[in-house]
Length: 466
Image 1 (cartoon, rainbow, N blue to C red):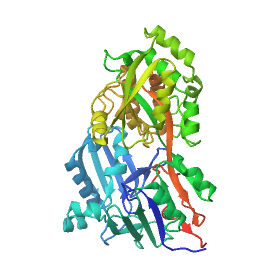
Image 2: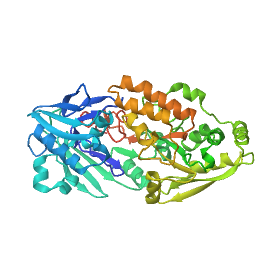
Image 3: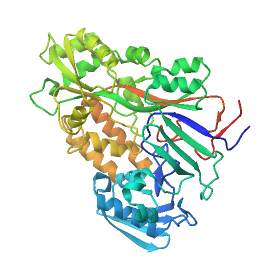
Image 4: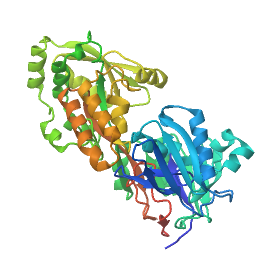
């Protein structure tokens, strides 16, 4: 048994440095809000302020104190930057050395969700000394590990912060090696150049690594779906029966098993099983593979001979599953052309509008399912402007956003999911998974048990000797 030995993770670039940056609050794997740098918080009765009671004795990595003044400094910076993540914020005030209050126009639970990212605390002293741009690549926060070195496209290295306020981590150092090509990364793992391989697409090599003795831990991501331009009244896809026919025509079970190699899960609703919106009975009621039913609905909709349509996908995502969908639709008379575009063009349409179908991941693994519904399914949403929105669903989403607890939010989220199902707003296909291939020396890291697939137990993970 060996505590405190170097740890090396192989994988793609990571967006957030979880062992370094800490937040006022965070959401756990159940979507519940928990304190981190704030031991607790209180929402005022009228919902127009949130008061955070901060931990005492917390130090930034540069040795300076974390307190209410530091929290206000960071939150003021975020408010000045603007953007959707600070929507509804009015001002931040210091109540005392360890109490800070966020004043808002009205309470929506997305305000708390957004603090998972805009609530990340960085040393004001480091910012004043070096500037915000420097801190973007040399973060000075309060986490269990502190920054050592970042080499773009190559590596990130961090070491244990012995002044950490929580449990002292076992490992001395953690190093991420960024290897863009997954085959090269897999070979590096097998050559002993690291203990962990972050698998972006588990189905591509997960089974092979399992056969070679590696433990493959998986984390469900959002599902892939076909989003129609149903908001356009001149579109064929504005007809609900057409959308239903298309879903009946797709053999999701077979595609998920064959192409996903057992890692994918077929879906018949917009809520993944790990979310509070998941509604089990809809899986039983779902539009399962039935080509005869598909042809019947097409005839009722006025398209007995089928029609032509297109689907937009980006070059960064494999097309094998869409080719399978294409083959299934052809059997019922629908000709599906693939429109493969650059990521820039794809994103432009994602934020704007499109014709026929858009293929993508609605990222429903956000800890707050209410935020997911607001972002994609409500009228006036920032995404999916081509998808027809339902006024009845708007009202349910608005009510869910006002609720303060998971228990209150759950039935409303499930009601919204039922409406989306009844209206065939989108065509859910299957979930995909990301995960980690881990060698036998890695212990107690709790892979894929947290809200983000990139997060794990940095403080309690340790290594045995081979």
